Image 1 (cartoon, helix red, strand yellow):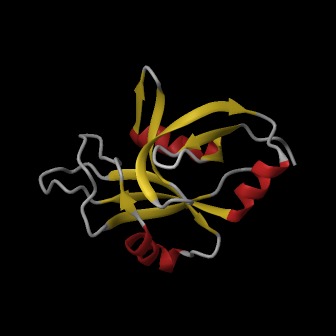
Image 2: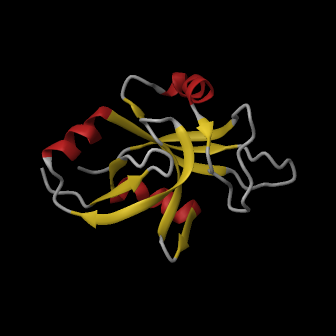
Length: 145
């Protein structure tokens, strides 16, 4: 198995680091990442604390170690487009959402509504997601190993 370049996503709420393959991060980086002097931030649904936040990307690393590989194997990663709370805003809240492998496509919306709470995720214009959460779309992200 070839080594994949990884970057940690550091949850803004619980500070847990979750490794993600760069190929998995690319869609959200293109669609709705924010850069500042302190780094690159993405909307992220932490699989540990279930909080939605603007979370920082850590430095790239390669090769992946056994612990990172195990964690990557335990999670299914989605890109989720949530409806914005501002009714006049057309920009969705786009986030990276790793979930435990037991959550499947038909169950994802129920998982979102039951488990997630917002702690800083926002659309491109700075608005929070509408609550109760309403997904415009979601797609599983599969990355090359």
